[in-house]
Amino acid sequence: MDNIFLQSLLCTVLLCTTLPSTASDDSCLLKLLPDDVLNHIATFLEFEVESDAECIERIKNQQSLLAHTIILPHHRTISHSNNKNACFGDPALERENFSPDQSKLVFLTTCKEDNCKDKNSRCRVLDIKTNTLVKNVFSDNNIYNILLKNNITRIRAVALSHTGSHIAEVQTLNSSGFTLLKDILFVRNHKNITKPRQFVVLEYKPKTRADGCSYYYPTFNHAIGFNKQSTKIIVCCTQKNENTLKFETVVRVFPLVKPRAQTLETYFRNNLVCKKL
Image (cartoon, rainbow, N blue to C red; front, side, top):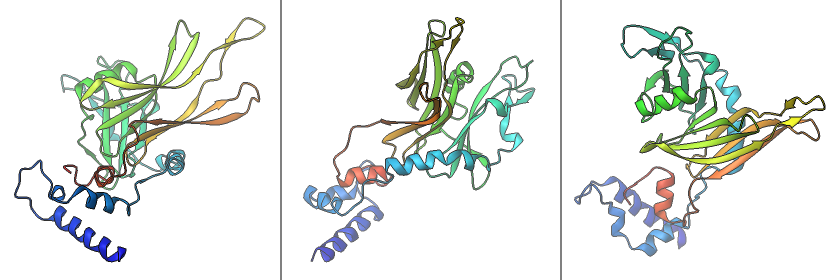
């Protein structure tokens, strides 16, 4: 009986999502169904598009995948403000990463020429299948490119959300003359680029040797990524344990939204379906 009921409900859902609406563009035909019917449908669905463990595994495997992804030289071209000359981005300062579905590559690049007057920086999004640059709310955004120009040397990793509406960076910052170093995660919404959410990934204080010289164990091999439902961002990096002196993988998980009720609306939003419900 439940299978027959579920099949009829799913048919109703498909009908509602495919038929043209006679109401305004902000309406959805699924709203015509009672809430208890919608919630009953939700009980048969899987809400966790990607678990934390799956996301961490994907992020850890990114470096090997990136090594086999070719960014053509002309994609690294950075035009000067006068558009008369052009220079190329420096691969050594480049930060790149796949989108969660690995269909696109986001990369930050900055001019490598010492005599470059502007030292321009750019955010670019590359379609993997066609190997062509595509438009994104952050690519060629003047405000974001100015931020890149000022912070590119501090950025350790970058990530783009599934929808492309959010971008994240891990930056290593110091305060009070290197008495405290921090890896900070910045998550930017395209609607408010200059006021990102900030999360402390790690803090590390320099140690002092017997000869008075300071030293510390920095983090490296940073890799970050949004989960596929864009509800969390995960940061992985490597750091030397000051006690065992062994290299260890550090993983930090940062929720971006509060846990949502498992309704049909939440399911559709997670899967980028019927945002108007």
